[in-house]
Length: 299
Image (cartoon, rainbow, N blue to C red; front, side, top):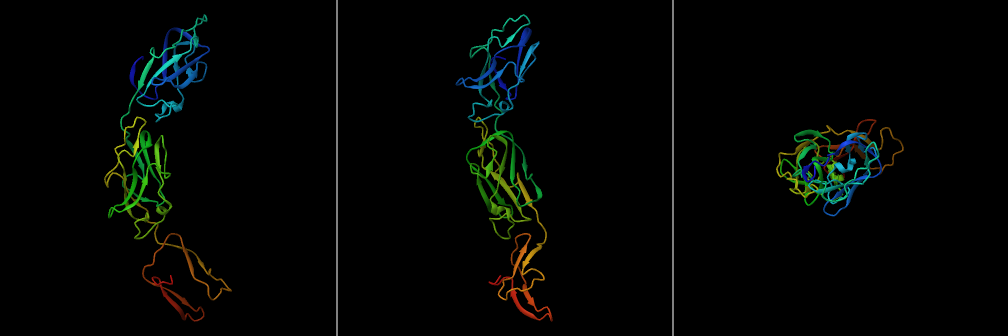
């Protein structure tokens, strides 16, 4: 209705006439009240307009109009004032009598609803999830489109609170600006399991995620409250099990191997020296040719 407030951004426009009308020639145009910018001009004969031949005409703005947008005049933003114009003659009755239309800024205007501060609906990984692959992206799903502002998404180790990585929300590792889904891509280094290395997302380790309050905001500048504790979003990465030897140099059964060839062992995941030795035997009698501790400088 004229001067209505709190209108959802996905509301369709409905016009009720005193008699049956038919679509003719002209547009239904949505303007921003603050500057008169045209948000969308919808031809009366288009598929977005239904009800021709009845007394009730329904206008469906495009999908884009259903999404709140920050600083984008092509989106029906939450908490914004709009007015509607209808071209004279855009509708007419069965005798060809034309509807006079609406050509001013005051006859039909409304204010879209402000949904309030963005709310976090779900995350990947989910809170308390276990067995999470170390190459998993962090995905935050909100109840309305959000935009990066100022702050970071920070990954911590749960055991000692060490910062694994602090990711600025305005950096290239954060995508989804202007949508309800924000994806955070930790650095390549985080995709590698690491033992005793606070800069690596180690396998079989517990982590928690914090988001700076105000790091994201909606189209009206309402800030997301953030996550500032160690319990709201925590997870445990997967332990892939014992390392497996994928290949070696020299390869098994290789011949003609140069006497100065280094031994190279390739595993299916990063490995770290622990306790033990690498021993070379003569095949004919199993005599030990050489022994090297895995913690020595030679390894």
